[in-house]
Length: 437
Picture (cartoon, rainbow, N blue to C red):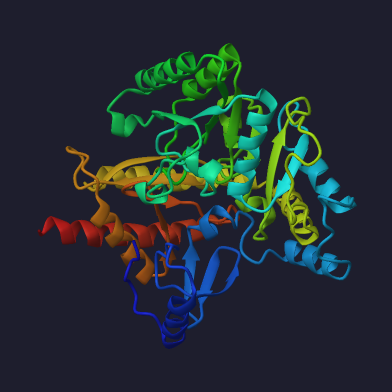
């Protein structure tokens, strides 16, 4: 849905007109915002208007927009070369990036395949699981978003429009993901129910299942945080039935939840990890990481042209160093707790806030028509997002009626307060508007 909010300026109108003439209509632009520049937690449109960014370029700008250390790393590499054909030739920089990346990961996750995006990193994990196990079935979850290429799309089940007219899909079984607020269950009951459904499928597939794919916190599906015992239970079932646990950290990783991997919050170690978005500091970069004994495919079984791109690896290396140096995980926990506390207070005061959930700076606000019926507040959410945009705050939707809060991890408390003031003003206006009806 495109939100018709603040009237675009003259430059924006002209660029939007040109865009409509040449760009695929499949893209989902939320606002009539035309990007000009960004700096840290703020972005500007081509007409000079400034916005506080609570979307981080869809969870990409974890280290802030136009990070100067990433910029310097890219400039240094530009003078040496931009592309080496890493699938056919050796180069040190991609190796250095991979070496540094695995130092952030748990256990024996020590072997890296480099790509260019989230869907590619998931696609590589999917192919790897099928290669290593020589089995064709995988299990994914309802509401999941893993990407839009055919392997990852086969596992995606977030919105019908993402799958319509693309069947037949690859062999994937979907099972419920624990969503306590919508399933009207206590956490433990919800986790048990979903684990039972997962075991039913694994038992039915017997020795034909290669892997279970999951997001430790569902992103596009609604910023859904599972009960802690659920992920531990998934790990146990994977071990019992001899299938790989593949962890999609494309949106939740890179310290967004406070830990480098979101799954680390649950004390679970996966077999394969997919990373992208924030890992490149704004440059397209993906990474699939597994234990050496799992990443056992042979030369030629999987490769690409631009994986290991020198500019992307330079940016990625600078991004990891900045995250570590600035202790962004600790900051995400501190500022995220501040935001979540404020939002929970708002939830007590506003009838249209049904639920607040999240870890670190990955927070979802579920908008409803009223708390009693929990009816999805889709129009109300659109109104809130529009109101906030007009006041200078950029937010994104998720799920059917959730507002996602995923600002840069460099967000300072005073900017968080300003954003929450705008959000509360927007919620107040929306509640008053729909209450009068």
